[in-house]
Image (tube, rainbow over all chains, first blue to last red; front, side, top):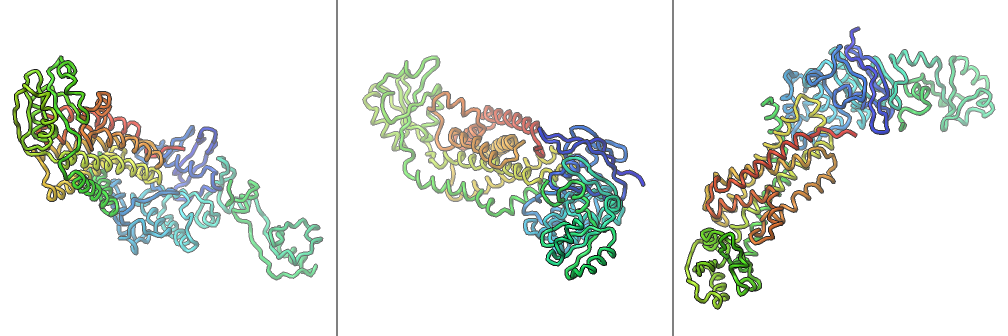
Length: 295
Length: 340
């Protein structure tokens, strides 16, 4: 597997704040690489240094062995977390504007089809819904047919339906053997899309690997949930089962054995819920605070 | 610079402006409303104060030549002229009401001006023994005089706020950041903004001038092409100032303050509403540092005195120098995105 991007000892210091604290990782060609972490973890700063938008305080980013220079903008595609589009331009005019900036561009028809823009091509940018806007921003990121695409929290603020549609678009792009660098704080998104992930917190990398590797490394247990009124307090205390809101969380490596125990103790299994550990749990396990909460 | 990229940004900015109906209407309606308002307010015989030109040959001063009988008269403004020809030209255009040359013991009145007649009566005693000479000419109405000021002021607001606010808004909502991530260079972006605004401002000014001319039949002694070239230079200079003011800021509140700080002195002191002739020397020196002063003064000379570009080379050169300074500083300080 060849390496598309190599990040070495990256540091970004803003006065008293170290936004990125000496991180290193590599991104494989054709992979979807996820930078995960809560708000303020340093994901956006890292990705913007990789894009050449901001300069690092120290360290370097190498694209196939070469340092970032001005020519990189012809070869990469970027979708920022917060970007407004020019008011009063239509979707088609915006595509034309951005097409003019590049030497090589995707054929507009195929771009419109790939990002599903056909239904609102002549609509003013101001009148686009959240999902339509993100699809247009994705199209702008793909307009120069880049090998490497940066997507910074692309589905933040979208409804579940629009998010799933957007995931499908990203999967379609991935199928074209493009390298994607994605930041997100939605763990289901990372599990759906990413081949490799790096988890960041307070500017540092706290874990990296494939989602499966990381989960199997840190968890060999599953979680069983039952309504708390169904589980006798002395039974919970005896087994150190934790109360989670209105439910009791039972962590076990052997589901059958635990269920047998519950039935033996005449505990009703109504409302029983069994779940494997996910990246949310992993983050909680690694840092002691929830991934979607504020850092 | 890639022409394709420049033209695409130029076109996009023009589309944005012309589709923004509220802004477009304001740019057209505001100067027309001002002109119509002033035509009613000053539809009488002009401004109320009388102005008398005193011919004073250097190195003498007015105080040495004219005794207090003249200069102590209240409610009359006295303006010194070194050349009698200039003073007579002003008198013939009704911008002053009497010219007195004490050394030659002569004075001139404008036979077609009621105010000239009245001022002559006021000074009849002091002018006893002076030769009475006459001049005449088409009257410059206040609206003819104020026209370059209002058009210039409108251009100033459009250039400063149209460029300054737009760039800061682009920077604040990350449009600039998005453009920076493309191969578009800062020079291509800035020059497209500059020329787009120049195109918009000149188009608007031509529409306003032509429309109002049908209504008011403006006085015009000079050539329209000279007025157009001067307008372009003035607008270019003011846009460059707008680019400089907006070169780094991300705050719309700050840019609003800075643009007001730039525009208000020009509105008050650049001769938009009243002539700077007779103003204190310090004020005149300060006004000389304001680009609008040179745009308005140059345009008035073309319109009222029929001046050529050579005749107003002082104003043209100052505008060119200011443009270079503003543009160089603006390019030096320009930032796509102010880092945290």
